[in-house]
Length: 225
Image 1 (cartoon, rainbow, N blue to C red):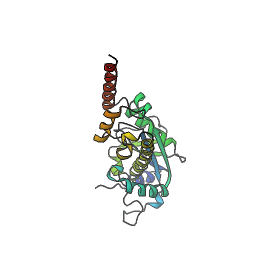
Image 2: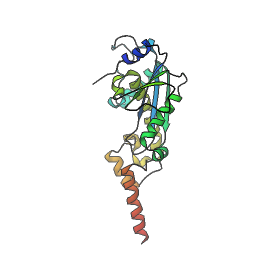
Image 3: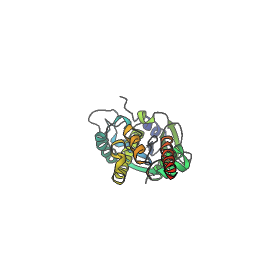
């Protein structure tokens, strides 16, 4: 298992930047629910030089390698040891309107705008910088959530925030099992879609959801004959 370091942030601080943030999104692949992003400015004074079991950030890493129980603990450590964090949410209707890539970039922009303390440098996970936040110097890095501590911290905050949203959606639409799969296209979720049809919180631009919509439409048309 790979763990991120704080060396990338230290390099930027050494070049004169005052506040360095990391940004990441979660929820690209699910068939339902929003895409969520977070931006985090970690407190350099709380990091120290070496990773050790005694450091608060010892287990902080890409949220995809953590389980729900551990994320709940880590997110509290992160929030207690950061200078600021912001969260951006883009709902499924907007995803359908502008496509998932643009929605993810919009969620990241919103998370940056949610910071009370404006960073002067931003690490972004993935291939693309946030074009609509041109006033902040940026660097996009593939697998940034594996390499850069502030991005890993952002991924955990975003994941916990999105999971909470899906838990609430589960209460509203319990037949789909959102509590268990968080909107991802698991076998359970696909079976529920085939049985109950598409809910208002499903992404209607996604291929499988479209297939279900066409199926139910064809069934209704047949029944009218």
